[in-house]
Length: 334
Image (cartoon, rainbow, N blue to C red; front, side, top):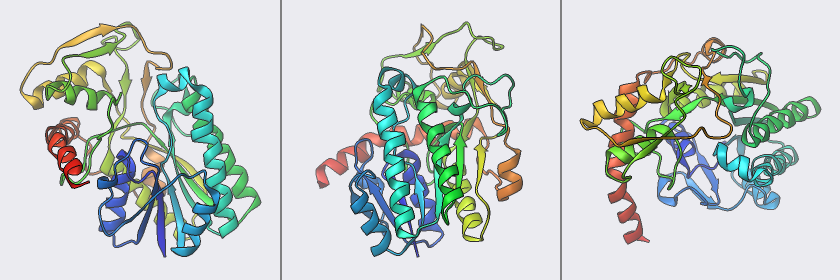
């Protein structure tokens, strides 16, 4: 048996590969390297460069490697970009996911874990937001992920196919052992941007809106350590392999931090002030998104190990400070 990880050369996917390798799993990664890096896939995982829209390639990988489960990360994730390019997001996130599911059904691979998002909730009436809240996405990114959840639901009703869709809140940090981290150029994630600024890679950073209905006027998000998120996927895999039913679960800690609180944490850990400048609100940003996170604990037995903002920032900053040398070494070895 092996596990196919789509998008496994990217940020979250590479941490998932580490989680699986640490557990002794055989891992195959399919990634088109549009945002990922080949060096992020550590041996003995096998990297295949290709696209999930290539149904023949996916089918061959599923059969040739004895894949019994797929963990699907490949896709586009930037909310403002989705507002500017909705058709691109529906193509990359929704249409390509449909092709991947079809290949799984055809090959008889009936265990599927999907990287969904809290953006499916839009602007929830209450926080924390639980899985039974209304799904009213306010961005094409959120809508593209919700449509994929619907396809999973309908596929499971028609075939021998079970899935877990994990709705991520704000994924942050890096592998505590320094093996992986967020390496994407022009990233928009707050902690990544703040760490780049603290490391001198950006001259300044922007705060997108100070007039939200929150205690300090800036957006509040639930920041979950990427290694804890990978561990939740591993528990979902155990659940499906044990015959567990399909389900949709939030992945977060159940408490949030504002933009200003995050910046304060980065400055504290970095030991220096950073240049931060006010900017208008971004399209598609709700004032607050905090996970109702009881179900993932109760149904998967998941217990986070890194629920500490300072630790998340420390891991992210350590990775950021070493990233330049890592990228330089990768270029020299290519």
